[in-house]
View 1 (cartoon, rainbow, N blue to C red):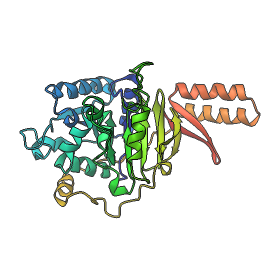
View 2 (view 1 turned 120 degrees about the horizontal axis):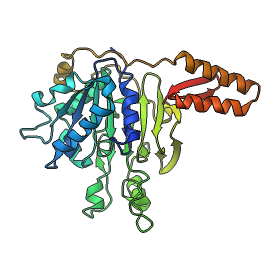
View 3 (view 1 turned 45 degrees about the vertical axis):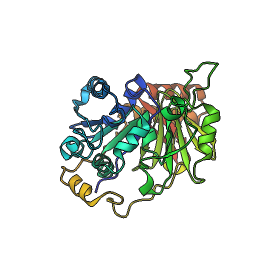
View 4 (view 1 turned 90 degrees about the horizontal axis):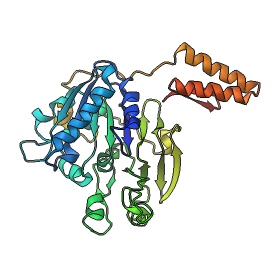
Length: 348
């Protein structure tokens, strides 16, 4: 069985320049052909949900044109309808997708429609078979251990409360949730709309209702985090930062940071990859052709030479030259980190 696939979480801006870079960063690690599946579900209550998903598909066709992607939109909009997430024909493209995306809409609607559904079972199964997943905006809230009912609180005026999420990482033993739009400032100086429009005061109320061992990741807009389970690393990409919150006290990781996945949780290995997935869904997932393993990009000779030159400059304490080499590496798409075992190159 191949390693479980990487997962990216975006605070917003899946069709922005920053979002496009995250998509490309992951797409270039996937052996051809690139097959993308876009789940409509979070926006399935909207009359134009097809157009919402279609705009993302159009963006990816252009942004990832060099990879010649085959893109399927999955209209799994509502249970017990002609567009049900339990319809095997509707969700069939998930079986061949090696990159699956789910994004904007309503978190609580997505939770209601996907909980226990065939679509959600297959998304989880395919990731355990090596597929890459990308969640953005409302979907990041929906897949967490605990959901934030944004519209119900911010638009309807309900009291601050929590809802059970899809709990993607429950089988791995990590109670983890996500808050996108963490640094939103649409309210200006008159209204605090940070923490996904909740503001600090209401977010603190929500946070106080979480279990003691719970972890929340706050995702700034146009910023994302990539979980690499093979390397056991987290990489922050985009224009701002990601906040790791426990007991409501955040630790902030700026863009460019790379840190151990263990900082978030142990993510216990599954003795059985089918853990938590229905036997029927797992059997169906096994009918798909196996996914090729994610390929790790190897630095070119030019990149390696620059990294070596930087290390030599550091050895002779020529900090200006070392910094110049670092900027040249950044321009080529590589970040260099100084670790106890020596410099480490990471693809941006």
